[in-house]
Length: 210
Image (tube, rainbow, N blue to C red; front, side, top):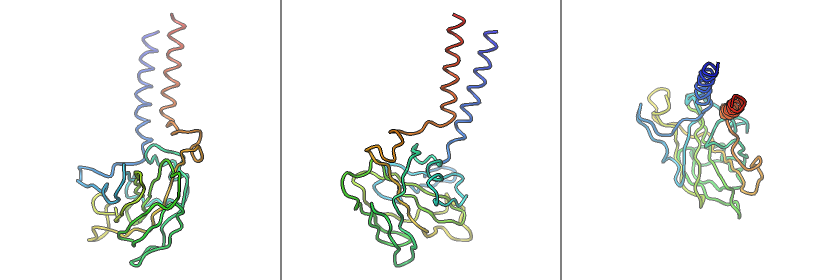
């Protein structure tokens, strides 16, 4: 009976580990098949991720989209504003944290939010037409340059185009003082919580048999 329960627990763990992988909703900004690397399209960053599937054309018009997206393991981002209505001459800047210059191809971002700066800051790039959201986690001191990350590869752009213009750049942040921090941390994924519960259940059964 004990061996049967052990086998069942092992199978359940395998299923849960597989399920945990399914919760990963971003992919790397670098790849080998086909080879691509868009991690350097924004300077002064520590990480880069693409919302999966990469051709889904998701819009960041809801915080739930971003916070359920798995960007950099953080699920309590706050929205600051965006650099929008971008064309060849520039765009409109509603961000309180950054001043943007440039256009829908390339430009600069400069921190203007005062002190203390937020604990974490992320720029989300949106285009459309067989592309999905691209996020860049910034490094302090915040500020640098950007260029369009929407290249082929990794994105399956239509026609002979090898790069698409940026629709807008959104700014997301998380404070270090608790606001926007949901109790001070990243929320465990459901599969992680299930594995923890299974482990505790197994320990309880072993104690009872002992």
